[in-house]
Amino acid sequence: MYRPTLASVKQHPVPAWFEDAKLGIFIHWGPYSVPGWAPHASNLREVIAQHDDAHWFRHNPYAEWYCQAMRIDGSPTQRYHLETYGAQTPYTTFGPQFNTASKAWEPSTWANLFRRAGARYVVMVAKHHDGFLMWPSAVPTPHKPDWRAERDCVGELSAAVRARGMRMGLYYSGGLDFTFKDVVIRDFADMVTAIPNDPAYAAYTDAHWRELIERYTPSVLWNDIGYPASTDLPALFAHYYNAVPEGVINDRFTQIKLPGSGNLPGLPRKLIRWIIRRALTHPQSLVARLQTGGAHCDFRTPEYATYAKASARKWEATRGIGQSFGYNRNERPEDLIAVKDLVHLLADVVSKNGNLLLNVGPMADGTIPPEQVARLEGLGAWLKLNGEAIFDTRPWSRAEGQTGDGLPIRFTQTNDALYAILLGKPQTDHLEIPALSVPETASIYVLGYNAPFAWRQHGSSLTLTLPRTLPDTPAVALKIVP
Image (cartoon, rainbow, N blue to C red; front, side, top):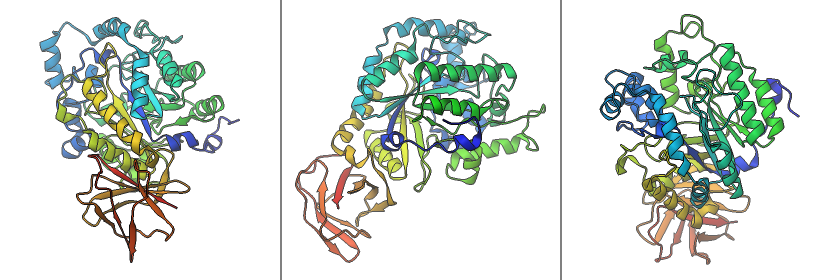
């Protein structure tokens, strides 16, 4: 039993299932799926690196932020809203429309797709920044009591996911809730000061998390944008671990105490903005490690970013299939990650001790856009043949390498095998891997082929002859045993 102290909850080990899982599916679905629109832009990390954070919020490609972007004067989202819905249509109009559309949703369809994609766990948004609840809570928002889904979306999907052998996690926006503190966020400093820190909101979020834990026993607590500073987080975490011993907690429960001036103690707005920007653009930096995690976490969550090297601490890369998490009808095919790049991303993340949490953004009626389905099906097809090089593996002594002709390699291992995942198809059937020595008794296989292939050791380089019948594939996985 965990005690409600920081020292106690810090003893919680990362469970084996989360180490083994490697691939999860994130779901952003709610009233923002009704307009389902955001402007074209690059991903978060690239935009922040090339522009300032004010530019990001003004041109926010995250469609789930529609309720904010539509109120920034002159923003593309505001122009779209005025042209499409008119100035007299508030965001709250989309709640009843979502409830009507979502009557057509079939959770089993989602769960079947996620299973075919190879996912081991699913994380659903239970409440986003707009405060809309995706379950029939006994603690409705006091400011908008009917601002919730009519269906128990969390419960229905949890049952469908678990029936197919996957684990279920929940996302909750603990830091932002515009039903409690409705401000227009134009930069990172505004975002920090927008976190409600009053006792009523602290009690509200604590009651919600405890209700979600008791009712749905989620395997993942995925909080976002920080947490009310007055909350006793060790008590909440101990309650969770005692209810779900193999559960995991992410790194976004950071508590920030703000004085009345709206600045961090001794930190001006400009420095707040620099700290958050640095953390986003350099996910393995000291600033990132200090800025996230708060008092305790089981894993870190870089967004639209990966680690440059393997991490001893578990982490999870999260991103959308496109440049948005919520459904964006404005996305073009070139805005979506290609299957080849998706396979390479997964191999890279896993080689460095990470999981990939890949987001889908369904339409209001629950339809996952065909372009997103195609990416999931393509990834699943590759994993069906090569999954043993990904699932249940651990990082090797090094994550990266390359062939003699420059083809990138990512390494993973199990207790009895080393896997070398070639990020692409070799151009010839003769392959050299520099700086790789294997035992004389080793056998080398290409996953999908039953027989081992000829190889030789030339000094510190390994050479082997691949089958001429290799199909077109995003990546070729070699298995070396022992």
